[in-house]
Image (cartoon, rainbow, N blue to C red; front, side, top):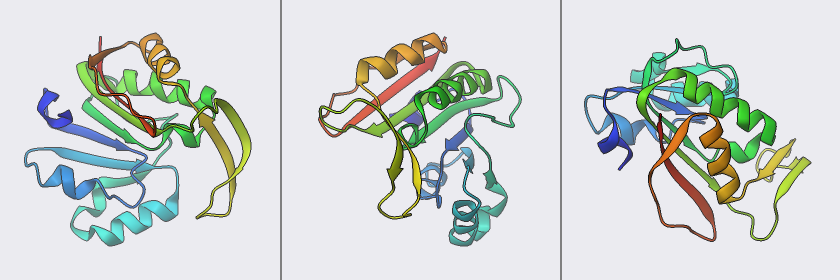
Length: 171
């Protein structure tokens, strides 16, 4: 659905990790995808995993996107927003809005944590064994923050007990 809504070819995979979505986007033809991640180790892994697309991956924070304003047609942000503070998430939403063209599409997805909401500043990631923030967003809260950043809900996706999925359009 994300790629069907795009008005142009320029897509950002924000928080791309090792680049697992790269193959999905590249197989759709015509899309020019750049993956960014704050972790140099993840970008190194992406460049090793996808050697033909090595130039497509960059170390970059979602809070300080090094792209010109109004330069991207879509942003895919899968399982990233919960791994930063809510304040950092608000900054990322502002950056997403800045770099998207008018009518650009933002896909956000992140896990739900049952009844828990708020933030934990010393969450220990089970795979990385490092401490990092964990933000437990509620659907309506994330939608309200996206609206403040200049987004409208493009498609109402089914709510899930395990995750939040939003498909948004920049106004």
